[in-house]
Length: 374
Ligand SMILES: Cc1ncc(COP(=O)(O)O)c(C=O)c1O
Image 1 (cartoon, protein in one colour):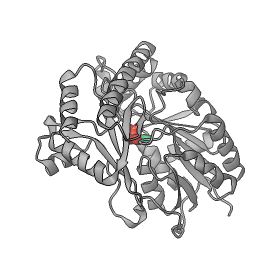
Image 2 (image 1 turned 90 degrees about the vertical axis):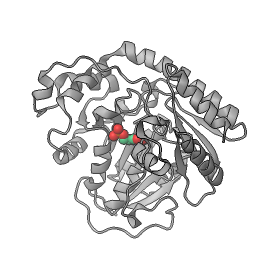
Image 3 (image 1 turned 180 degrees about the horizontal axis):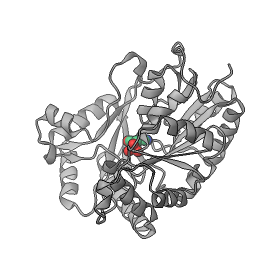
Image 4 (image 1 turned 30 degrees about the vertical axis):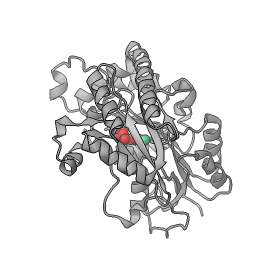
């Protein structure tokens, strides 16, 4: 089937029998998210500001907010700030990019750039990808979010036209090496396909420098789009800044659908400073390492038998669904909110924990006590 890379969608395709993960095309509700304290408060009767919220993967020691010149509050952000664009290109090592209100708007827009197609998406991973591709009528072909290299066979056999890779994966922490991504890009581009690489958590990697692990410098290759976020490593989830890194055809298609004035001048000012602040970035990586080591040790002493997946921004513990649900519920009863990832059609689940800053020893004690009691 010949694909038109950047055109509107047509009729939905029937669902594949390979569908094993949540089938959003049958649901009116979007995916659940971490950080939903309102929902947790309603369910457990605990006030919003009394929670220890470990349900996101946001750096607990986020970039400090600088003094912001008043003019940024009054100006319409008609064009992206040139300092911000320059800082982002230098930071990511990308030739061309597009600013967005987080990486989420691009996740929502991308499926509309193609006619109905077969898109590979990890069965465990940030679920907004599947939700939006399915809503747009595409046929999702699931692959393992724990072992993403399984996608290789599907691409080699020509079973998919597009692929979404979350690198590193949230919540499984799995990664795909650059050489393999490059091979997938070549194969997909040969068939006018596209490769979406979600690098929201790629700024700080355990085994490699971000440059080694990031596809950013290859992002202008045909069919590729790399998504980056200031909401994780920089901790600036509230200012809503992200980027799509890609070649001109992809960026033009995205920008023609983008919302006018969607990123405030205030946010752009803060983001430009954060992206250019190498000193803060260096120190933040050291702090994250200490914080994630503490969280790993704490969880390991409670879950000695269970496999634990460690990343610099969160730790996921694998266990049976029943156990994960029980522990999630008991922790929530103590005001500690973790993130439960049920793995559909399997008996197991992941409990994901965001980090606690060493500046908050009381919060660390609170988690330790809560873990002991469940
Ligand atoms: C893997 C992944 N990608 C993208 C996003 C979207 O984040 P943002 O819009 O803040 O960049 C998230 C949010 O949790 C995520 O986990």
